[in-house]
Image 1 (cartoon, rainbow, N blue to C red):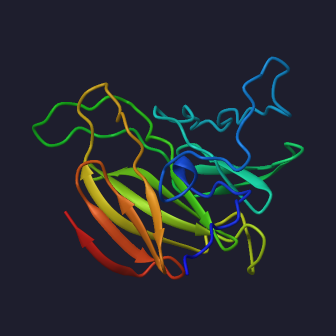
Image 2: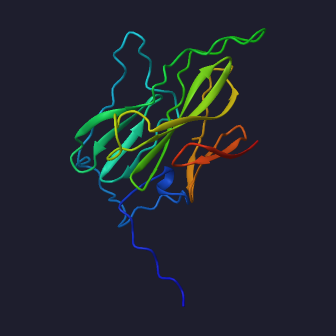
Image 3: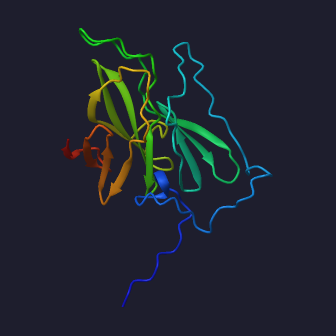
Length: 212
């Protein structure tokens, strides 16, 4: 016998709605937005003296899990109640944005902030991949959050781990595509547009394998 269709999910746990990236929502979406949405919120900008723009394009894609919507800038993940728009304290990566530095003998890169973090969610957990400038390279860092459970400060990551690095941009052009996260069984898989694919244990951050 054939397996019946899976019941529609009310969550949107990854870019494009899931690992298939087919962008399908259960029940469809209205075509009439003349009355506006149920709510709208602004994530604002940093107010600290070392403030920076939210991020450069492409801007963060939302994920929906556990009745909340999550969207990221370059160093934080914001969370909103899906029905009311009520906000909670953002999840912080702990990373400090720094302008990219000129490489030895090379051109000075533009003062661009990193692109928004990629997100995915499952089983009550949330994962993000941030970028930071370090030693003339762009280093990608994965972070795991437990928004509703766990011990200690839930705004801080349960773990972080460096995934891979690449050359920092030398022109004013940002990337044109998202760098995506995917869950495959116990593994969190990150695909860098420059050609690296890295898998880590989704629950511990331990590296499983990498390919470039």
